[in-house]
Image 1: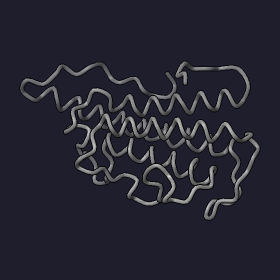
Image 2 (image 1 turned 180 degrees about the vertical axis):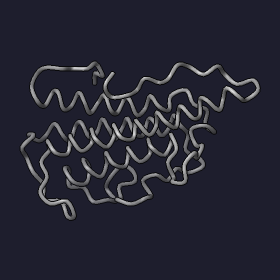
Image 3 (image 1 turned 30 degrees about the vertical axis):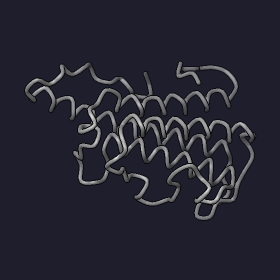
Length: 180
């Protein structure tokens, strides 16, 4: 997997590259955070840097393991229900563990997607007929949106750590925006 920006080539290469870049951008928003900061709730929803990654891992499983590979929810390698539980992080889960979970789910998604052509379709209850192309675009959109959320949360966390005694000096903004 390369996260170098590819700007020309076959459509599939461009789509897969863009998806991998948004995956990496999302992970970058949480890298280097303390466990406490990764769990900090700065908005009324369940959204934290850690929960965004947990949600993204579930999205990978839902769209690729369930919908494309045809696995039952119970056969997936982690939470794969379409509800707010995708944002649920337990007390015993660590940032490193959730990043690894997301990266494993992403790797499995790449393997599953490789079995299909961009024009292959599935009829998904509640979605209708979708193509693999549409799925890749939907995942790019989803992860780019969440990387933006993560950038904002990270900016708030980094700003607040400047005011803490003995805190680390915050780094420059994460620069994880999709258009870098």
